[in-house]
Image (tube, rainbow, N blue to C red):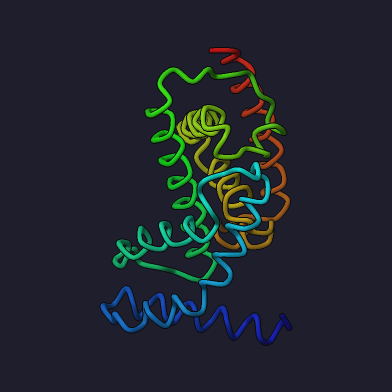
Length: 196
């Protein structure tokens, strides 16, 4: 997408988000049409790391995330990047809720020790690992909230360092440092849990 088209699209999404926050329901419908393809691309990107026999499909992930986002009308949306950052959080919640639901049905699934690289290749067949990653991210958020947001936006939302920096009002160098710190922190946290 050309820079001019990207800027126009970003401005249009921001205007629609603000109109929707102001109560214009038709703005949400227009927004859905514009952002659906990008949300689906993010879901495909994330789901491409999963096993082939997964039961949750990218379209289902997008639809569930979209339904949850629809409940956030009064969020006070700031921009397109803010919307996609929140979408990353919502997709994380959908995936973790799905994994927890599957784990409840399995009863007693064994957790295993995983590296962060292995967690990057999680699938719905690795529900225990996704739950362990979510628990580690929750702990990271308690200790280092911004670093957790960087992980969510990068890992679950597929946002670039520049988009993350704009969303969090920090420099790209800070995003890189936060990402590197978070990877090491999560690796230590996941390794410390060991086999369950």
